[in-house]
Amino acid sequence: QVQLVESGGGLVQAGSSLRLSCAASGIIRSINVMGWYRQAPGKERELVAVISSGDTINYADSVKGRFTISRDNAKNTVYLQMNSLKPEDTAVYYCNADLYTGVTFRRVYCWGQGTQVTVSS
Image (cartoon, rainbow, N blue to C red; front, top):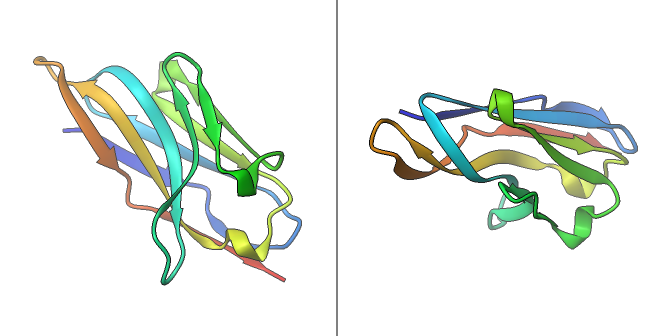
């Protein structure tokens, strides 16, 4: 089974930075896409940033210039560097992966448990 574990969330003041990490564990054959989504209370889960195996990166307009997504293929890990945080960034941040796993190379689309990011003014 594949598991995604996020870490790095916390409570910070506006203008601060956080770095989120998401590590995929299990038998990972290959990763198509890994990325970050977030969900605030009363809101739909929304895309923050994604990175593909071909290094295509997509950011939400609201985070462009402030957030940077990166990956470490050897560690099956994706990162989200968040700078100049705003109260509007407050949400639970979820890691997402589209990957192939196991001896059968089964394609899996999975989510992590989420990590809370709270930005105070």
